[in-house]
Image 1 (cartoon, rainbow, N blue to C red):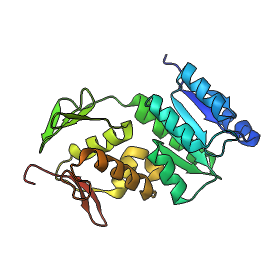
Image 2 (spheres, one colour; image 1 turned 90 degrees about the vertical axis):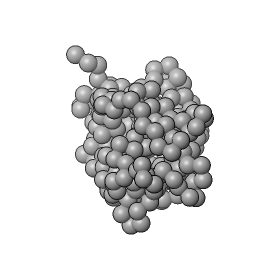
Image 3 (cartoon, rainbow, N blue to C red; image 1 turned 90 degrees about the horizontal axis):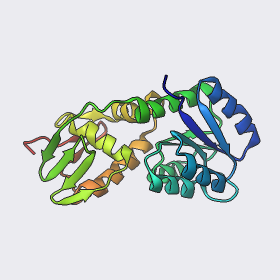
Length: 232
């Protein structure tokens, strides 16, 4: 029997702790709770949970900074949970490596759907792509999860690599915004285009020789994105 996924819940609101921790445990997850950024970072360094659910409004540190510090230490998925619903805050969290963003107040089933989708992608998905793909000097090694442009290795976050892989394995085919969002973040994120806009911007800065004139990651206005095929 496989062990239950271990979740770190970081929120200083007692009402949220009392509601969410039992909910998560009732669905079979192992849950630890931290009320401050320091507690969360110390726990993360010791235990390396499978998922971090992170509130941005912590008493001792901005949650965006916590997100960045966790991401600097590894690939553990981060689900941001916050009363800050503005696009600026969402973009800031996603830009620092958050995998998803849920705005308070939220329905318990929506939250659980996001948790399941995030864990499924990080724990339950077997790598089915093998070998390499080369296009115009860009080389993607699916087995090693490495990307090079020429002789330069490009460091990508897990989400950036996931987006690049999705587009590259459908080279020449337009993937709609909605289909990309559903594939990478799950059905609950299908109407949150800011997730994709931020991630694409980050990926282009790393992969494209000139991000303002993309060669590999092409935009189809009002529709979606596609990876350039051999003829381009």
